[in-house]
Image (cartoon, rainbow, N blue to C red; front, top):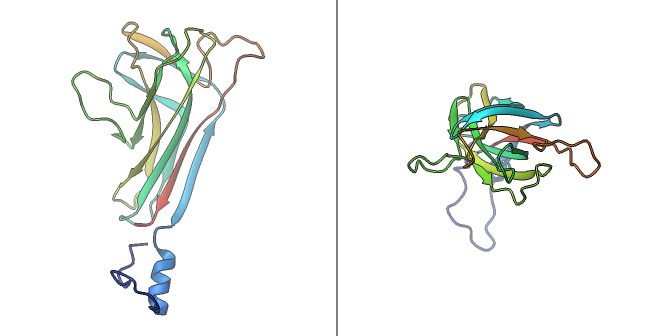
Length: 188
């Protein structure tokens, strides 16, 4: 639903809205649909430094009802890497285009969110999140996905893990986390 155009630019005390204006206001800026997935199993990929890998099970498809709609993307990712300090980074992708990432800055790896691990314990994990309000400008089916990135400083290639640590010891002190991806169509 488009932004209401029959509403006054400003409101004054005691002003009465028409039925059409009330309907416009009621339909404005609302969530039209929600698509979500949760990944509970583990994932790992060998990723070159500065490169990306699709996370199996962290993609969703949404078909916007209007080309003027926005899509709010919310991602939450747990995991680590084979590098010291269990570093984790990811980017959001619409079809084949990265969205919600930092500007190109030399050789730096562009991501939506990143974390430097706080422990050198290979049983540790980090959890990072990110969100972005996208403007896909389409009414065609659109796929959003999460790609992990190798933004570590320890060697050219590292194994990146999702929902697990690098050591993945079978013990009660090791968390078995879940990761998720949610997209919401928002009327503009």
